[in-house]
Image (cartoon, rainbow, N blue to C red; front, side, top):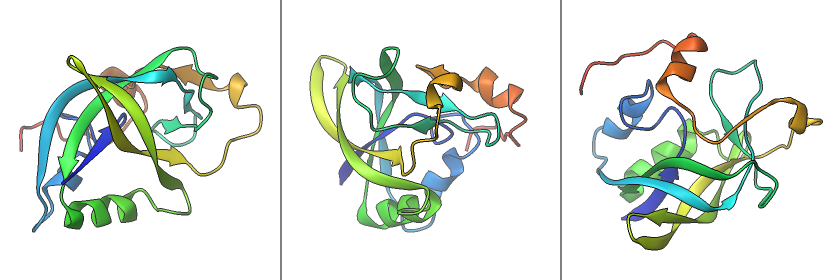
Length: 142
């Protein structure tokens, strides 16, 4: 099992959490976490989900998300879902999970948009943001 830091629509109660429930896949929720370094997470106003840019110390602060543990089958599904290597690539990141600092995999945006600083830079993607971006939400417990 491998630890993955999720920060957008794959979080608990968010619209794409169902991706984690694919057949033959196993995952375990480990808890809320924050990045040790400051990374820019942006909303570009076109897609209704956030992008994390691999620009350490360029963000407004730590990024809030969740850590899950996934098996190999789910890791492959997540790579496909995140369109690796076209849209995202998997990298490593250190996060504070409860009282412990751990290293996790995370999906970074492949391309850094020009003038990204002018886009909406956030530290946490909330359910209200998802609703405001008109995501097709399924808020029922799975």
